[in-house]
Length: 256
Image 1 (cartoon, rainbow, N blue to C red):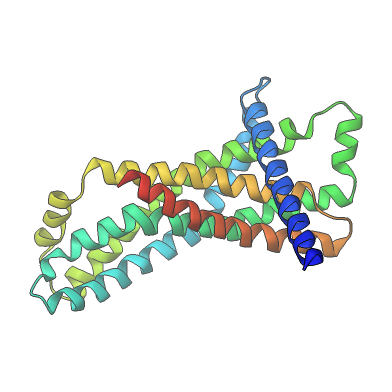
Image 2: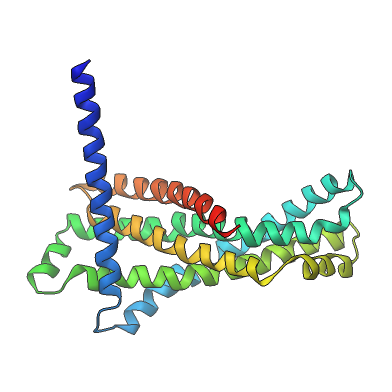
C-alpha cells in the first residue's frame, strides 16, 4: 500500500514538474516574441507555411461541414416545422464551435506536426545546440516566429472556414433542398450577432497559442534518434488536439 502511494506521489510530482516546464517554455516564447530585433521575412515565411499551405484543407473541410450541418439540420428541424431556422443553425454552429475547433485541429495535423518534426530533426542533428554556441537564442530564432505566425494565421483561417461553411450550407439548403435564399440569409441576419463572430476569433487566437506552444515544445525537446522525432510528432498532435478540446469547453463556458 505504501509503495503504491509513493509511486502515485512520484508520478503526480513528475507531472506537475512537466506542466511547470511547459508553462515556462510558453512564457519564454511570448517574451522573445515581443523582444527586438524583429525579422518580418522569417515571420512571413512561417505565416505562409501555416496559413496559405493549410488553405485547401480548411476550405474543403469547411464546405463539407456546412453541407452536412444543413442537410442534417433541415430534416431534423422539419419534424418540428422549423426548417426555416437551418441558416441560423449552420451559422451559429460554425461560428461558435466548429469553425475555430476544426480549423485548429486541421492546422495541428498539417502544420503543427511539421513544426514538431522540423524542430525535432534540428535537435537530433544538433543544429539547435549550434545556434546556442553561436550566440543565437533558439527561442528568438525558432520558437517565437512560429508562435507569432500561428496566432496570425489561425484566426484568418477560421474566418475563411466560417464563410465557406455557411456558403456550403447555403448550397445544400437552397439548391438541393429548395429553401429560399432569403429565408436562409434572413435567418442568419436575425439570429447571428457580433458577439458570435468575436467568440470565433477569441477561440481561434487562444487555439493558435496552444497549437504553436505544444508542437514547438515537443519538437524542441525531442529525444535523440529517429524514433524520438516520430514520438514527438505523435504526442504533439495528440496533446494539442486534446488541449484544444478541453480549452474550448472552458472558453465556451466563460463567454456564455
